Image 1 (tube, protein in one colour):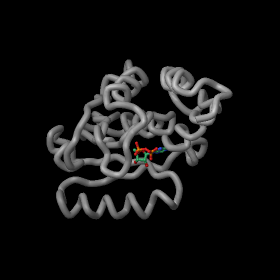
Image 2 (cartoon, protein in one colour; image 1 turned 60 degrees about the vertical axis):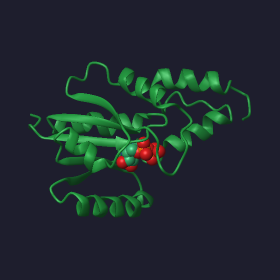
Image 3 (tube, protein in one colour; image 1 turned 180 degrees about the vertical axis):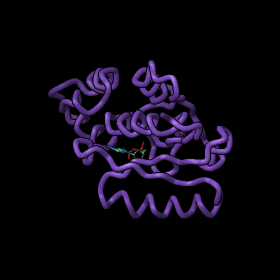
Length: 167
Ligand code: ADP
């Protein structure tokens, strides 16, 4: 039975993958509400898809999940959490390579907001090597990503990069 705790699940989702959806929907069985926070303009990278496109992909993929909300933000993660009165930041952990970055982010966020806890869920084994950047790379070289992303995302990527084409 989900608790009354609200968790935010922040990310760039450029584009959303089945790995993200796995963490979000598993989270929604453990928390009362999961707010998927779409970072509009990430500091480190310039996204392939616009915030509008990324939001539509997420919304379409999460239709029917009553306790999952999609929202966009361009501020500190802890400020976004406060906006939703969330005391949990939910993150997915894939391999050891994620750990160092996520550990540092969790410590920084704890410093900024000691009352907000970062909670990690391990990626499902079948999604452990799945990343948005990997999906973009496969698609850019005309490879199939149908098993890795929701159908609408696969269609959009195939339009951007026709199968068999090379970026
Ligand atoms: P990416 O790292 O794929 O570019 P984001 O920056 O959007 O994705 O990441 C948002 C969150 O989703 C992070 O906590 C990240 O660890 C998690 N995540 C990304 N891909 C997966 C996956 N395949 N399985 C579990 N969690 C994932």
